[in-house]
Image (cartoon, rainbow, N blue to C red; front, side):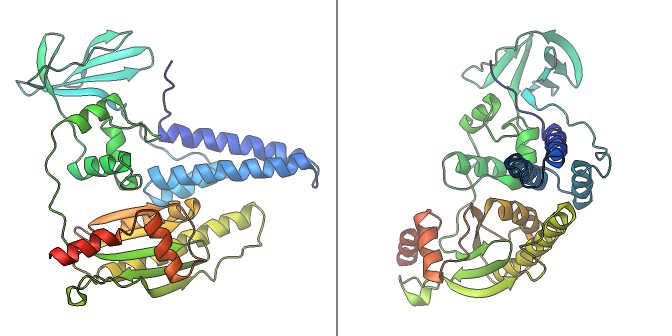
Length: 353
């Protein structure tokens, strides 16, 4: 039996309930006991998963704070409109009406322009003919998709291990039924990727590169500036900015201090994103590579998204590793080993330009 992925808001509630349950058990243990230590680790693990889910699926800062207050028992969960169930199939008839198949608690519904016209305990078969058309309950329809082409390309690159998860497009991909909340590809998603797609925009033959490496205390911004006047020789990465987090107190403990630490991390992530944006906007065509610990990466994603303007970046790549302690050549080597600095390709592009 296939396990159905929880909707993200339901997952947030589940994590919050689990955190409070562990917190209560933790408070009942003696201060120096091994059980208390084990429960403290479990609380930290749940909180990290909660924070990652929060940064990925809740775009509003005010709502995030309400969710954090709910997890720590300081309020009710925010009022959130129910998320419509993603379609298992969405098609358009020759007359322009929309037909959808949706999973419900007791089976599957067939919707015609939003109204239920059929219910079944088992799903309808979705097999198209050679023209890409489907016969469904007497209607001839063609499957349609809402997620934009850049989201599809980002998903394809992720599945082919050419890029990190397309977090900026996660909500659109889930809403269109192409992935579930764990980023697993659905049957509808496979059909979308197998369908003919628009050709992606022509990739500029030469691009500058901006690199951000960060942990919660320090960040560095580096560039690999490709210039035709240097022939086919590529310079090493050059550090152009360094940002420190004076608000961070690594030895603080306790719930309130931990909350303050997270706030300091979010403010720091916003500063790092601003500094990086100031660098990448110097170039007409730029790729951004972000390397950070998983927790810091979760803080940086929304901060960077808020800084991105239309046509700002050609591509955004992620590496869930802390490289801040490496030298500049060490960062260059680590990113090259991870496939994020394809210096050979860039040299070929320069030679043929």
